[in-house]
Length: 74
Image (spheres, rainbow, N blue to C red):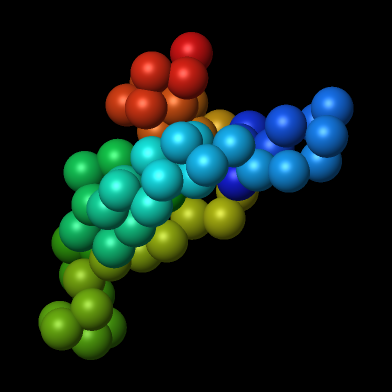
């Protein structure tokens, strides 16, 4: 996501886009990540940590597209 805030002509970050990224809820409870990268484990080994985090390409692509839509970057 930060790469999308880079102005590649002059190799600096666009301040407005970086500020928009900072406003996103990056926590595991954040709505942008639920159901794609972060899924609730129905039978967690540790009940205080009921989430599973996926690092595979498909859920990450979905999460990036959800975030871009939320920021109106697409």
